[in-house]
Amino acid sequence: MEYNTLQPWQEINQNGVIYDHGSLFVYLEKMCDPRKARGKRYHLTTLLVIIFLAKLCGQDTPVEIADWAKNHAEVLVQVLKLKRSWMPHHNTLRRVFQNILDEAEFDRLMQEYQQQAKQGEQLAIDGKTLRGTRIADEEPADHVLSVYDVQQQRVLAQAAVERKENEIVAAPRALEQVAIAGKIITGDAMHAQRALSAQIVARGGDYLWVVKENQERLYQDIERLFTPDLPKPGFGKITTDFLQAETVNKGHGRIEKRRIQTSTMLNDYVDWPAVRQVYRLERHFTWMRQGKVIKTSQEMEYGITSLPREKASPKRVMQVRRKHWLIETGLHYRRDVTFREDATRMTVGAAGRNLATVHNLVLALIKQAGFDNAAKARRWFAGHIDQAFALLISNHSRL
Image 1 (cartoon, rainbow, N blue to C red):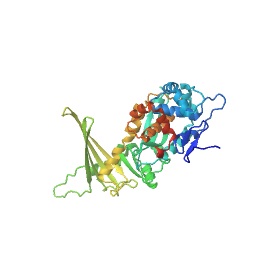
Image 2 (tube, rainbow, N blue to C red; image 1 turned 45 degrees about the vertical axis):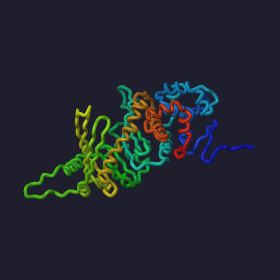
Image 3 (cartoon, rainbow, N blue to C red; image 1 turned 120 degrees about the vertical axis):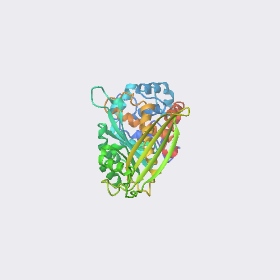
Image 4 (tube, rainbow, N blue to C red; image 1 turned 180 degrees about the horizontal axis):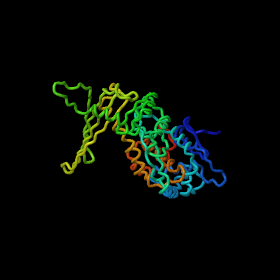
């Protein structure tokens, strides 16, 4: 009599590894392997799992990943149910990024995996240059634009960009890959474009952009609106509808005061799709050492949003704007510093962009495991490889 211990939500691969429906392992199994069977020692899924496990456990370059796999061969044979303990050479791992992975297919499957999980309300868009792909005296380094869920801290879509200036063209293409109805899209001044704003509103979303001199007329209109009114003798003060909010934060040796003013007075005046509010945000920084002020600075920012006052008070607008920075601190900074992405040389083909996709996924897995500090998570997984593997074979809802 045969017994089947699989649960309804589980599958099993050819090696006998049991994994959940909807897990990352499912999507890795779907990847097409262009290599011929003759001379192929490792299944593509095996190579990808080793790469993801090594990344979770603190290894960055292909050489480090290969050495880590060799030193942990016994554990990898056990969890992956391999027939031999030989581990791949670092050149094999480089070929995975350079030649074996199809960039379009890898992006598509990873987006499907990332977007199946619960999503937050705010999506931030921003680009990052992959400096590890730069070759001296040749074409500029690769550049990618990410659509980042700031609440769930995961990249929902990523688009390749020829150079930073072309983010304007890539942003609509990246957002087309994501459901944005009911969501707030935030971006820096580069993305404050009429066509992109109209696209977002037409699809049921809202936008909030920083406005700078690249939109000169709009910038001047907002700046003039919030300029302090100096009435002429014999004339009354102009009536305004300004609302404001203030916050004070202390930490990292400084005091930061934020003050925001919002207005609807330009809604019918400026030529911009679905504008509902404009704002002025003042930031005042005071650096303290031993109870004494050593330096102060002040910044002024103007912006525009399709969020009406019924949905977004001044305090809410300030919160949305501040959360946009999570794409820098939660994604770009971690890839640069924690994963040493820019220091890892990936100059052949789409290797650098595929590596960026792997990093996006590893950061999502770390957040999924309940860690807020990526470096701390990698140190912990280095001593708990079985738990790192459990992340790959488990569905979001079962963790």
